[in-house]
Length: 438
Image (cartoon, rainbow, N blue to C red; front, side, top):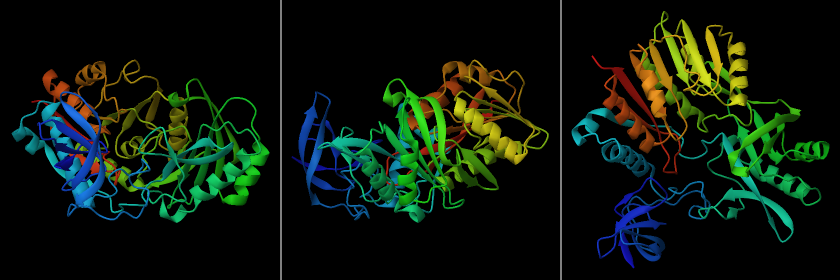
């Protein structure tokens, strides 16, 4: 079947149309390609297909530096030129606001500002995770493939911090060697690296129970010079990432990164943006939207380890920071102590149940991919805050929530800016600025 890729979707696929008018989601093609494809599944409204040959390559098709593009799942847009990636991400944000948020095209043109991008298209990730697999009775470590059931062995990952490019291979080799003589029961291996602080942390995710601590540290120390090796013990279903405890096997018990003037410590289970320069762009956009003054109070919901809390604390009279994840709460307290920020009240708990009692002048939210609960939007509307900055990692839930704010009639979105934190993928962050309706 011959298909012409018309645009990129919010996913790994390109979009085309088959002769009968149905939409085709095509894996392996980029916008502008004409491909030969085979259908892998179909229904009355659409088909899914895989490109088997590029008949007419797009002017936007490039040769990626990684030979595993299309096999490994880490960079599904790796064969698409950077400028086309940016255009596609901007288009996906616009589409979400129109389709899901039901904002008019004219309104969306007013709202959406030019996309912000980071200078590095490759080598920007400060973190990767490898997964163990047993093959032929031997353990190896790799990255998830485009087929999520497959694990792909890699010698290096061009997305990972360039100054530590050899670390994943060395760590994988050491753990594979050790795992073939001892039961490590590894669920995943996290590697975090910072060009700025030179911190390299290895996080071994395992069930609770016995573990060869001394042997693991010895083998890893022979392979790489890590500033910290930690074991994260989990309970329950593997994908749930329910942390039972963490123990430090070697060096520091957390990873450090520098964000602007601040240095943050982040424990292995805690979230931190994988693109440090991109995180600084998010901070800049959020602070520009809020423009807080030294006599104002801020609320920071879903504060994590303090990415936005510390910049707010340095500009405001006081901050109430709410975070539900225990390790992140502990990281936040440690980071505030290091920064000598004594004007922050840390509230551990759910953002809705523990919504701060005090009023605020400005409010920042950085929710997970699911977005804000309806109750959170209602509570935000009951404050007297003049402006809200909404940091989002999903254009669909952002569009839904902005529409909810607009319907409530208290806050109105005035600007939305996409930020390309994840080059070579379809993922995109965005910062929305909402102002109180007059």
